[in-house]
Length: 366
Image 1: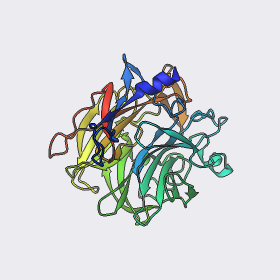
Image 2 (image 1 turned 90 degrees about the horizontal axis):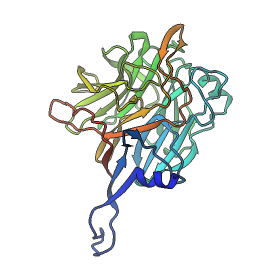
Image 3 (image 1 turned 90 degrees about the vertical axis):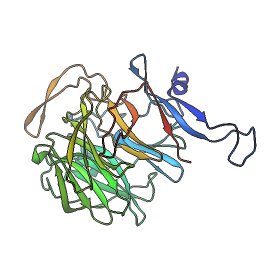
Image 4 (image 1 turned 180 degrees about the vertical axis):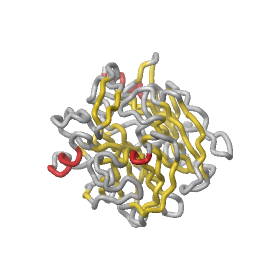
């Protein structure tokens, strides 16, 4: 059955029968893939080359040097949010030559280290985001609620690692508020080499903050803009092909909830002014757009995490407040993802609403 699922998830599409070298009859490399998100209304899990479901959630997909990389939270060791008795499992890395055949590279780094278990137990660490420093290293920022600024930063020569820990970054908003300062965010490198982080400022009603990073992408500079959409969690910042800067976000933020709206805002520059544009989807394909909008060769891919067993709402204490979580199953090892390319409809930066397509076509890097 696992082999059947793996074949059902994706279909390679060839661009003719002539190779790039001009030899007739020799098959070409695929130029696109067809991804199956669902069948008969039920999500289809994405699997690795061993037929096992991908266990990398709330993370990032990036492309570099002929390889697609996926890094995200793994729940396989039994982690459950807020439950300190369960260990934090860390992040898992997958690689693929074609967005189809994903290889499990194992743990992104050793999450069993005492430092990470202390920092990430209970409230947890989530939302791994990758950005490439123009001077060479890759940086990974992730939401670490117990850290001073709500974030931790690591560096590596490539997405494959090895990853080493950097100093805790400073941010313009929510600094020195461990446990309640800043929530999930996204990274963006502009064409001029300047980097930015978009993050949720819980000390400011959950508004989104866009802050310019230092030249080495290791900390904030203090230069920032604010998007005044309350409880706008998990912002993803990117530039449209036409030049419009865009932030998508959960509307409202709701941890591990299904059917959360995704809204967006646009601006002529990362520093604004930002204009709220409304919803892209009312239910995010029965998920939550907590993963990064992936800017890949030929496509900007919106990703929604479809959490499992969202059955029994129960109150959860977070920072002294009661937050009703629509969650009945706090371990999300088997959560699925919906992928869908964004379509841009005009020079003003409008985006066509998400249609929750059962199958999509994704172009591959050539």
